[in-house]
Image 1: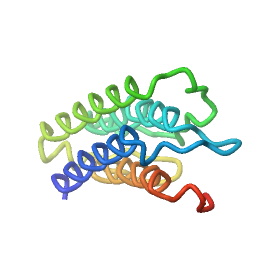
Image 2 (image 1 turned 180 degrees about the vertical axis):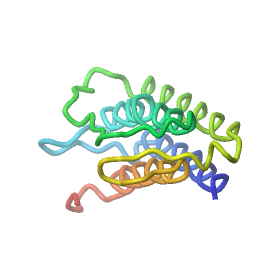
Image 3 (image 1 turned 90 degrees about the vertical axis):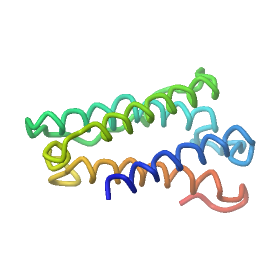
Length: 148
Protein backbone atom coordinates (compact mmCIF):
# COMPACT_ATOMS: atom_id res chain seq x y z
CA UNK A 1 0.00 0.00 0.00
CA UNK A 2 2.73 2.49 0.95
CA UNK A 3 4.75 1.73 -2.20
CA UNK A 4 1.65 2.29 -4.34
CA UNK A 5 0.92 5.63 -2.64
CA UNK A 6 4.51 6.75 -3.15
CA UNK A 7 4.33 5.82 -6.84
CA UNK A 8 1.07 7.74 -7.20
CA UNK A 9 2.52 10.77 -5.41
CA UNK A 10 5.55 10.80 -7.71
CA UNK A 11 3.33 10.46 -10.78
CA UNK A 12 0.83 13.12 -9.71
CA UNK A 13 3.60 15.63 -9.01
CA UNK A 14 5.04 15.05 -12.48
CA UNK A 15 1.62 15.28 -14.10
CA UNK A 16 0.74 18.55 -12.39
CA UNK A 17 4.13 20.07 -13.20
CA UNK A 18 3.82 19.01 -16.84
CA UNK A 19 0.35 20.53 -17.08
CA UNK A 20 1.59 23.77 -15.57
CA UNK A 21 4.71 23.95 -17.73
CA UNK A 22 2.89 22.91 -20.87
CA UNK A 23 0.26 25.54 -20.52
CA UNK A 24 -2.65 23.09 -20.34
CA UNK A 25 -3.18 24.19 -16.76
CA UNK A 26 -2.30 27.84 -17.31
CA UNK A 27 -5.58 29.71 -17.17
CA UNK A 28 -6.43 33.29 -16.52
CA UNK A 29 -7.71 33.19 -12.96
CA UNK A 30 -11.13 34.51 -12.13
CA UNK A 31 -11.52 36.98 -9.28
CA UNK A 32 -10.45 35.32 -6.05
CA UNK A 33 -8.66 32.41 -7.78
CA UNK A 34 -4.95 31.74 -7.86
CA UNK A 35 -2.89 31.84 -11.04
CA UNK A 36 -1.01 28.72 -12.11
CA UNK A 37 2.20 30.10 -10.58
CA UNK A 38 0.40 30.78 -7.30
CA UNK A 39 -0.98 27.22 -7.22
CA UNK A 40 2.56 25.91 -7.77
CA UNK A 41 3.83 28.03 -4.88
CA UNK A 42 0.96 26.78 -2.70
CA UNK A 43 1.84 23.16 -3.54
CA UNK A 44 5.52 23.72 -2.75
CA UNK A 45 4.69 25.40 0.56
CA UNK A 46 2.19 22.69 1.52
CA UNK A 47 4.74 19.96 0.91
CA UNK A 48 7.52 21.84 2.75
CA UNK A 49 5.45 23.11 5.70
CA UNK A 50 2.83 20.42 6.16
CA UNK A 51 3.27 17.01 4.53
CA UNK A 52 7.00 16.50 4.97
CA UNK A 53 7.32 17.69 8.60
CA UNK A 54 4.13 15.98 9.72
CA UNK A 55 5.16 12.62 8.28
CA UNK A 56 8.57 13.02 9.94
CA UNK A 57 6.82 13.81 13.23
CA UNK A 58 4.63 10.71 13.02
CA UNK A 59 7.70 8.55 12.32
CA UNK A 60 9.31 9.69 15.60
CA UNK A 61 6.71 7.70 17.51
CA UNK A 62 5.85 10.59 19.79
CA UNK A 63 2.16 10.66 18.76
CA UNK A 64 2.04 14.23 17.47
CA UNK A 65 -1.18 16.22 17.23
CA UNK A 66 -1.93 18.36 14.18
CA UNK A 67 -4.43 21.10 13.57
CA UNK A 68 -5.81 22.01 10.17
CA UNK A 69 -3.08 23.39 7.87
CA UNK A 70 -3.87 26.17 5.46
CA UNK A 71 -1.73 28.59 3.53
CA UNK A 72 -4.70 29.95 1.61
CA UNK A 73 -4.32 33.46 2.97
CA UNK A 74 -0.74 33.88 1.81
CA UNK A 75 0.40 36.01 -1.10
CA UNK A 76 2.20 33.73 -3.57
CA UNK A 77 1.97 36.21 -6.44
CA UNK A 78 5.66 37.07 -6.62
CA UNK A 79 7.02 33.54 -6.73
CA UNK A 80 7.99 32.33 -10.23
CA UNK A 81 6.33 29.16 -11.49
CA UNK A 82 9.57 27.34 -12.25
CA UNK A 83 11.14 27.97 -8.84
CA UNK A 84 8.01 26.66 -7.11
CA UNK A 85 7.88 23.56 -9.30
CA UNK A 86 11.57 22.85 -8.66
CA UNK A 87 11.15 23.26 -4.91
CA UNK A 88 8.04 21.08 -4.87
CA UNK A 89 9.81 18.34 -6.87
CA UNK A 90 12.80 18.38 -4.50
CA UNK A 91 10.60 18.27 -1.40
CA UNK A 92 8.45 15.49 -2.86
CA UNK A 93 11.61 13.47 -3.61
CA UNK A 94 12.80 13.97 -0.02
CA UNK A 95 9.41 12.88 1.31
CA UNK A 96 9.40 9.74 -0.83
CA UNK A 97 12.99 8.92 0.16
CA UNK A 98 12.13 9.48 3.82
CA UNK A 99 9.17 7.11 3.73
CA UNK A 100 11.08 4.51 1.73
CA UNK A 101 13.73 4.51 4.47
CA UNK A 102 11.32 3.94 7.35
CA UNK A 103 11.12 0.65 9.22
CA UNK A 104 7.76 -1.18 9.28
CA UNK A 105 7.33 -0.21 12.94
CA UNK A 106 7.70 3.46 12.03
CA UNK A 107 5.14 3.13 9.25
CA UNK A 108 2.67 1.86 11.85
CA UNK A 109 3.15 4.90 14.13
CA UNK A 110 0.28 7.33 14.48
CA UNK A 111 -0.54 10.91 15.21
CA UNK A 112 -3.85 12.67 15.59
CA UNK A 113 -5.41 15.36 13.45
CA UNK A 114 -8.22 17.75 14.37
CA UNK A 115 -10.18 16.81 11.23
CA UNK A 116 -8.95 13.31 10.23
CA UNK A 117 -8.60 11.78 13.69
CA UNK A 118 -5.90 9.15 14.09
CA UNK A 119 -3.48 9.26 11.15
CA UNK A 120 -0.75 6.88 10.08
CA UNK A 121 1.97 7.76 7.62
CA UNK A 122 -0.02 5.94 4.95
CA UNK A 123 -3.08 8.03 5.74
CA UNK A 124 -1.06 11.24 5.56
CA UNK A 125 0.34 10.17 2.20
CA UNK A 126 -3.24 9.67 1.01
CA UNK A 127 -4.14 13.16 2.24
CA UNK A 128 -1.22 14.55 0.21
CA UNK A 129 -2.35 12.58 -2.85
CA UNK A 130 -5.92 13.82 -2.47
CA UNK A 131 -4.57 17.37 -2.30
CA UNK A 132 -2.65 16.79 -5.55
CA UNK A 133 -5.75 15.38 -7.20
CA UNK A 134 -7.86 18.38 -6.25
CA UNK A 135 -5.41 20.69 -7.95
CA UNK A 136 -4.97 18.40 -10.94
CA UNK A 137 -8.74 18.32 -11.42
CA UNK A 138 -8.79 22.12 -11.33
CA UNK A 139 -5.99 22.29 -13.90
CA UNK A 140 -7.66 19.82 -16.23
CA UNK A 141 -11.11 21.42 -16.03
CA UNK A 142 -11.89 23.45 -19.15
CA UNK A 143 -11.68 27.19 -18.55
CA UNK A 144 -15.41 27.51 -19.26
CA UNK A 145 -16.38 24.91 -16.62
CA UNK A 146 -17.53 26.25 -13.25
CA UNK A 147 -15.22 25.79 -10.29
CA UNK A 148 -16.25 23.29 -7.62
